Image (cartoon, rainbow over all chains, first blue to last red):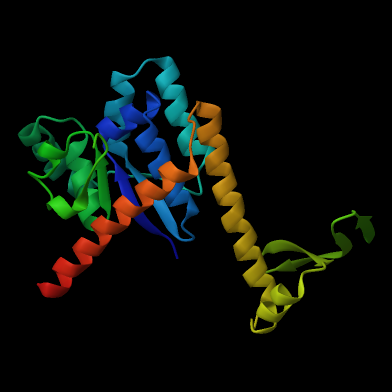
Length: 132
Length: 100
């Protein structure tokens, strides 16, 4: 049985594509757990894809295909879609709404470079500041 | 089909292929240190235990390969620090949820 331990939001995915070391270390931490996964919300992946160039998107693609036993894209379910977009608009961050929903669903840790924004939707204990 | 592969640091003997629960399996004979053998003796299904351990290692290696190919210079110290940060958050959440 595997559990989603960490969620990467749009800012974390962009950080990964820009080779921010904290995101790489976090991925390695999850990979070392026997039953833990990194969850990538589909909406966050889409939002990051729009903000990255081809090389950045290639790195994200390699992450979700090459490390597929560690990293998994989490689908945006129909009933969550309205809430996800409402949260995105309220927080003014594309993809953060879906990331917050998945963080709550899996009782996971949200990894983000926007902790001040994320704590408007989540408890502080659920937010890992990648910029710290 | 049978085959024998000998290496200096290990002995691997391929005996036969089989199916188990829809998954192709292969019976092999391996040599392990005494302490490992004693641990396996306590397992009801040693094959499953070993397969799980090897898969966990394959998972770690695949992730590290992806990170290395991307250009990350991951260090043990950095991973240890990040693990501690994640564990601290999980402990704080558990403490709050048990108090609630």
